[in-house]
Image (tube, rainbow, N blue to C red; front, side, top):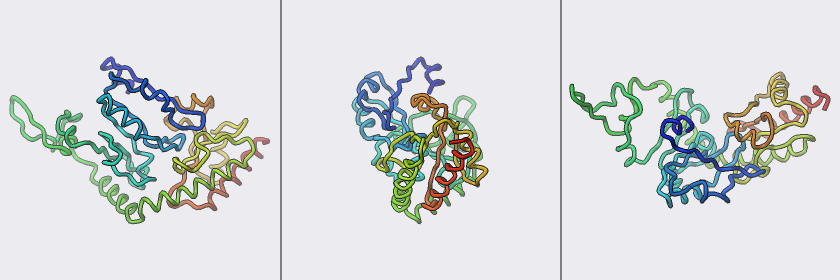
Length: 280
């Protein structure tokens, strides 16, 4: 978005977040104005785990005639999604976060928009007719799929979608809600631990970021790694949000359909070991 603003002279405006990790909608009318052309937001925050109230934002965008792009990379793996019910103009998500291969993702768009927007890349299969004077483009989706496609990755992503559909996204979401409720209750009993994001299982997914007093998240991650516990540490591609909470980084524990409460117990014991190593 910064690059687009530099090319076009547009201004980028930001929503703020509350202390408990919710989207601050008190200024929605000031952020989205008659001059707004496109609204982009995450459906679920990969730092905070929050499920954002996209309906309110989309309603305001419609009032001023703005397009809406939703990043569903963190919601597609965890929640049932109905792209029509969400009401966005474009929805994007990645394959590797939903059991698929790396290097492939999905862009869903309203057909009327896809028909009139220009292609972003030229190459084989996206051309309808070529002459010495001009070219015309194929109809979507081929118009946006230039060159040799990632065939193996597409097959792998399709298999992942079939697998998740077979289990049922409602069942996956229910399982993760129970895991979220349990991990929050256990982490809240760890002295010096601060959860960054909502402290309840409602309107959030099973991704929990936290800090430990006096111990850098990178050190937390290193000790946990030595114990065979996989977490992610850092800014999680969301440095402005990390700065908002006045912290250098976080440790993030993420849970999915294959995780169990017993693994949460292992994490909590691992954090006790971290504190012991660093004199906590």
